[in-house]
Image 1 (spheres, rainbow, N blue to C red):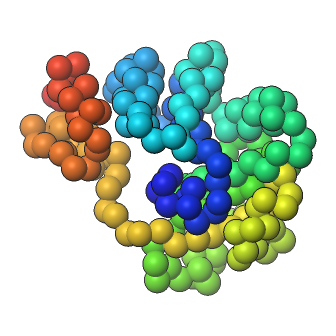
Image 2 (image 1 turned 90 degrees about the horizontal axis):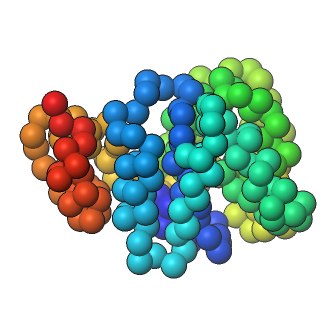
Image 3 (image 1 turned 180 degrees about the horizontal axis):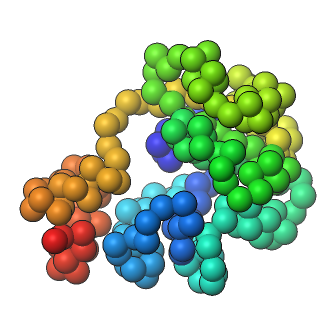
Amino acid sequence: MAQEAASTLGLKQVRFIPAGEPWQRDVPRAPASQRLEMVRLACAGNPLFVVDDREIRRHGPSYSVDTLTELRAELGPDQPLCLLLGADAFLGLASWHRWQDLFGLAHIAVAHRPGFAQTSWADSMPSALQQALAARQTTDPSALAQAPAGHILTYAITPLDISASHIRTELQQGKSPRYLVPDAVLDYISPNQLYSE
């Protein structure tokens, strides 16, 4: 998704920011330091990808609004920023901490599979999120470069049925998720006995 987003949206850089203490899910099975190392291994060799460890270093829950506030302060008020989300994550956006503040900090780019029915998708959103989508939606990726924040763009990506939960399940069952994760990451997981029973 990150590589395709960079190409489709004309991004100069994609930052990977692993959550230190995710607040909307169970405690991760792998420690933050090891999750950070896996992200570094996965991103190695791609000049567009940058690993940012700020949420790992931060104490307390990892809120996207705090991270984007820090990035906005570092990069200035005029630098366009995009928060990349999958369609499922976007559907839950209204449950995020200070979610409405995100629009003043970044654009939100929502990746979905081809053939995605946006009309029925919007109907399944909370009304506040429907209103935000109606007020902020653009279909033009170049609009993201013309303003620092505020737009919501949905775009199609190549359908790949890969999920972190599926990969963890494969590992727990002693199966190999080779080709679902970069070899360097898989080679790190095995000797560190991550995600195995």
